[in-house]
Length: 302
Ligand code: EPU
Image (cartoon, rainbow, N blue to C red):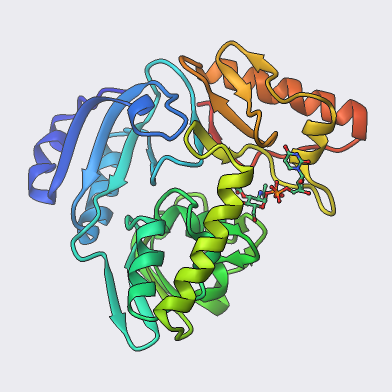
């Protein structure tokens, strides 16, 4: 999608929005898959309502990209412009046991920054790639920790209402890899409440989680983490593994040899290859186990 509306294009500099024309999503996603489109990089939250108003007025379809680590985006010229928040500096402000974190902040760096200030609780999330905003939307979790448990407030741009609102934790439902945010809500900042813990103790916890992750997940390969959610009481990875599907592939889209619920881009996989692999594995699991696997990765087919 190439933005052609002149009113919109002319307004971008005043809104502090940087246009990257024809950006390649293969360079912006951890799977290294995805077509091209215009990318709008937003430097100041407060200009978001006006930007969205102009996008709507010019009938420019758009979507919001976070850290690109849990998304599978279609090939070719994309039918939407993409919006992305730029990380401010500093991106975390601490006050007692509260951390106010920008949605564009990197999750792993936030965990270690808070640790250095003796604020713990997030150890399990070390190694989960992506931004705070993305983690929040999906209620990212690992090793018994879910981000939602620490959330006290979220400042969010509600596209439906056209304004920025602050939601209290009691107004948000956090479930397994799912939240009650609307699909067009855009996370801006989050206030976390974290337990006090000595740095040395937190680092110990981080080390244990890192070791577990390194032993079981293909960390140095291009992936979007787990492809499927675990069905209640079952493990998608174990079922796929039991079917002998490690290494199974469609083109360069491949079931990881290390963890069967990680599908990797082993070279030049296209979105079509990855989608075909997902469909094939889902069908095999359905036939063998009668289980219906639901994607954990967010798929933008357009
Ligand atoms: N297993 C196999 N073969 C495999 C993979 C797993 O037999 O190829 C078995 C394991 O031996 C274990 C069970 O399946 O007995 C569960 O595996 P694991 O402990 O690796 O956890 P998981 O359920 O596959 C979940 C999350 C991960 C998270 C880990 C650690 C989901 C879909 N996945 O994986 O999150 O890192 O627990 O807490 O909930 C993600 O969300 O992208 C993700 C990777």
